[in-house]
Length: 256
Ligand SMILES: Nc1ncnc2c1ncn2[C@@H]1O[C@H](COP(=O)(O)OP(=O)(O)O)[C@@H](O)[C@H]1O
Ligand SMILES: [Mg+2]
Image (tube, rainbow, N blue to C red; front, top):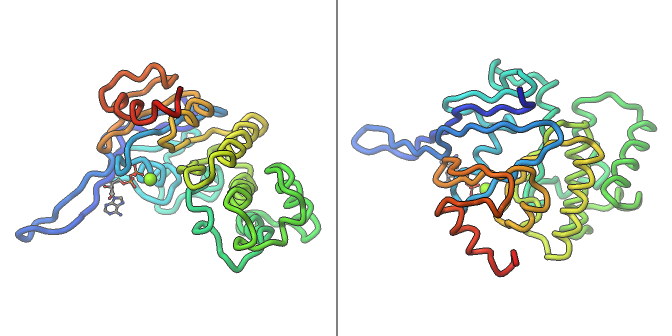
């Protein structure tokens, strides 16, 4: 059994009512996938295809309408509240690095937040660990004192990555983590993510519409279209479905 198993997962939203009947929209339909430790699944698909919704269900913040998600064999939504031992195994990095943090906190406090919720460290231990995390994401110690407004997008995304790895998770959901960054910074962050994946044996779900980035980081690729996975391959070049090809064509100039 794989570390992560998603089986026949669907998410339906009530989006309105018509003649006293609920109008339901299915954002994710019958999705199944599995992911092993240390591997990266690239999740691609046009905007609105259900990628983030699927990501939130795997993250543990949105209960599926049906289907099952298991992490290390344990049903994620098997109990009313997800056990903290499982919750800490899955972390997230979002596209909007500024929106993901409290603007009043220093970088150090941002990184320390999950530690304080889950782990009891002394002040000295916490400080040493934060410095270690800063170094792992390629930032010098003094960046720990800065607030989000004093950091560039790339630097703040490194802080978000440091926070995501602080609890030594097994899986990180990367929801378009580089989409808002300049091209050169995108490459730097991709390198960092790859390096951390190898060093920490992390699994990733890398949501992106940049096929070049996906081919760099992903070991397997799933294409979503209208809530469904329409194709799963191991390399971008193997994509065959019409919708996948459309995505591919849209990106051809940057791919080659
Ligand atoms: N809470 C919600 N209520 C109603 N519709 C939603 C909700 N969340 C997402 N959706 C809809 O589900 C679809 C998939 O959204 P999303 O998962 O964000 O797609 P993607 O990340 O691929 O762009 C979209 O049409 C979106 O409007
Ligand atoms: Mg999204």
